[in-house]
Length: 190
Image (cartoon, rainbow, N blue to C red):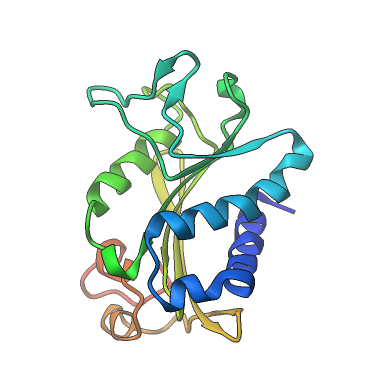
């Protein structure tokens, strides 16, 4: 199973077991915590750990080049071993989807860069999550590699029609379209 598949499996488990958190618009940290539990179950077999808001680089605070200290919502790694930085996640829920968005985007670009920055996470994901939609912008090597839009139907992830316009995606609650798609683009074809 790839890391992307593991993340999708953990998200499916979140919807199945903790969907009510999304329905009542619980705090983003509550949602992130539960997702971290399901991810941890999948990665522990490889000796990796999922940490929430982990702010260390070996024995020092995490900091991006030229920036203050920073910490991602969730990471999959081996503590103190930079070569095993596997996944970095930023999660947004409907209540706060545009608060801090640019900062999250900067973090994902920097944490997944293979040059300059010291972290070199193999994959990053910017997740927008509600009870009805789940959108994921996937990062590799400091750039957005692809964007997946899903509608949630009975806890099942249904990929969104790849021919919807940005406007149609936003009307359907897919807020990552606002930030990641060019003004006149067709949805998931990006």
